[in-house]
Length: 230
Image 1: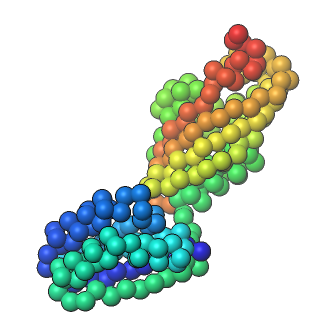
Image 2: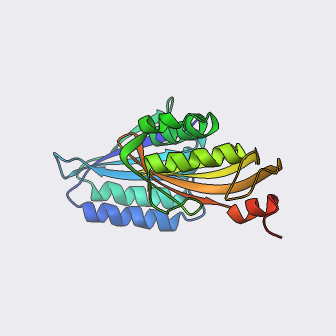
Image 3: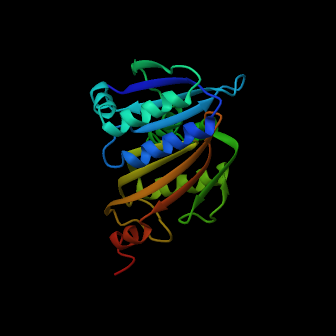
């Protein structure tokens, strides 16, 4: 179970705290078990800082706390604070990553279920798509869906998300696909051949919707499978 620790600090020396965090990151290279760290400043009190540190589990957090480097930096952190920091330890019981969810819906419901009309709900009005396999590397939603629909009709693809990584407003996916060449694709008449391949896609989300996307496919490998290239 993911574990999160909140460290609540009051200090008039924010620069010193940043230096200590940098020192801890450098000193624990290859040893630390923390996976994510965020430091936030209270907008109503510039001396009030909160660090949020994420670990794979409570047990991994304890390993991190027992590092001598962690203890040393902690003692220096206490000295840099105006008062004793407080800690809140949390077991994560719900972790909903909303940008990942909307991207997964796009794959499951728009592409795999071939419900192209749903893209209007999942994407922003000014959505832009960038895909070298399409007619232009900068398409609006309507044109992107028209051309995507033609590809779906031609090769009946089924996409699988092998991994999904989110950071900030970006979501990146590693994709595999399978299908059958049942319609005209890039001027090639149907061959009935089975196809398979890989790709990557990155999405920029805004306000809970997809605002932009970049796609990269092994189109050369696909053409070889269809017999268009040696």
